[in-house]
Image (tube, rainbow, N blue to C red; front, side, top):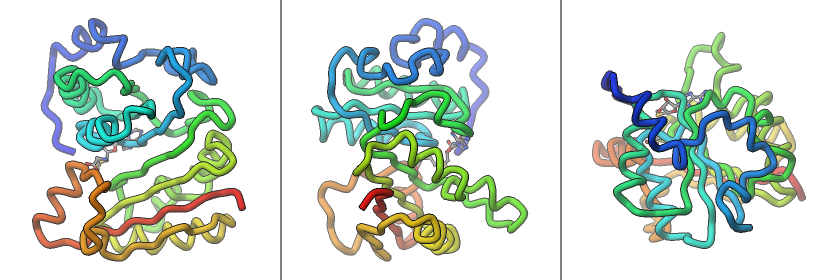
Length: 213
Ligand code: SAM
């Protein structure tokens, strides 16, 4: 994700701490209270500049959306867009998603999205892939019993790796789509990366998987 240095970012984040919530661990198991309602919570990890989250929040006003993004300048871009949209069912966290269990309690999340996660293609970096077993352990804990993990990527290697990782872990695959845009799914909300890669003619893969039966 392209980043520009934004010297005013800290001030912006402080002024908008109702949207980019600081100290996420303080709100563990309490996110519905932060939203001020009891709607289900969907979480996107590595949210980038927020296009997916905003599209989803418009399409599903009955859902609360949280986006986690590690880069400060990138989350500022996302926050600017959310503010311009006027949507009130989005919160952003400028956090490292390395242990989501510190920020979310058991069963707190209904759906988890991984969109165009960094592929980490070298074998020695396998543990950094967001579909590696140790991440699946976290997702299993924070997801509701029948909660879904929805994963999109243009990277064939990461997609194949992730399908094996999901099934080795005992997850049930609900969908394995090898050319998402060929099916004209009108509910599909494109991410920034999805738009970029598909405009270059690259195929987009999608998998939906559950932990429970
Ligand atoms: N999801 C967006 C999309 O599809 O357009 C962005 C994809 S970009 C390849 C991956 C994003 O994940 C980057 O913005 C990066 O900063 C973020 N990211 C990577 N590792 C992360 C981590 N450990 N915690 C939170 N965000 C992370």
